[in-house]
Image 1 (tube, rainbow, N blue to C red):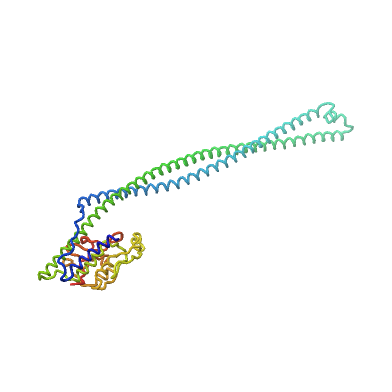
Image 2 (cartoon, rainbow, N blue to C red):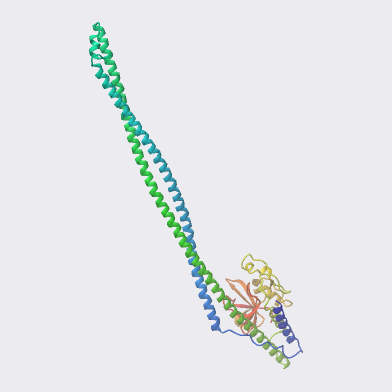
Length: 428
């Protein structure tokens, strides 16, 4: 800032001294020209930066795709993990059901065996009873029962008793046989249920193995994708660093070119001022009014002052303001400087009072076609009738402007893209 202020002071002082009537004949000599990089160097630097920018763009796209794929794989891994958990729970449930079925089948088998044993024992007892009933000497044997009867009625009673006993045992036997059948059916059903449970357990075990394999495959795919994403990230970081280096080189060359153009503008201004002084001292007509030169001198005295959106007024540079967007990202609200219309307010202070809006400044004076623009006219740029920039014309295709956030007040060739068809003339 100090160096810039000193330069601006020298420029303003030199110009003021020249414009005073009856003072010295020439201004202080402009310093030797700085280095001026060739167009080929600038173009080569820009081409290299563009190439790196394209590479960064391609890598950024690939990285975005890789990160999206990684996100999908993360979701897939979570899904496969839950499916593996489900398979594990299903397997445990199938194993528990199979164990219960095994216990039920074993109990049914034991009940069926017990029923069979009871039936066989009852049948054996019945056979012994029947055999004994027809043997001599038996307590209820058929012969002794009949021969020992004192009367036919007693004989009939003894026969009925024997028949009743035999019938009862036969009924019990039948019931036990039916129970045996029921137990056998229960045993068959239990064995069928056991077979079904075992089949389900086998199916659940296969499902768990498949789920575990799917989970492992998803995790491996995610790991592989993460590795590829890491490689792309590293490649993009390297390309961005190379792009930054290339841009810095271009910025350095552009800075040298800008310093040269600033020097050229000052040299042209010195030559024009000297020519005007010669014309005055030789009795010729003055090429430009002193008011125009004062306006230009005030604008030129601010070369190097930072751009600050919303900054500047008739008194000089001021603190910028927030715009909620690009200017804020450059910290313009923390800088003391000018925006484009603020610089015009300062340049024309004492000659014309201008509003802090380039659109109103465009209508503040007389419009002249660009083909007739002259030193001290204001040039404007816009789209669809809306003005977005203003600069002060210096002559010979040069202008002074407060360009945009991140830059400083500078002298530069006139840009014709989006330029309005008329210049605005306040003086002359």
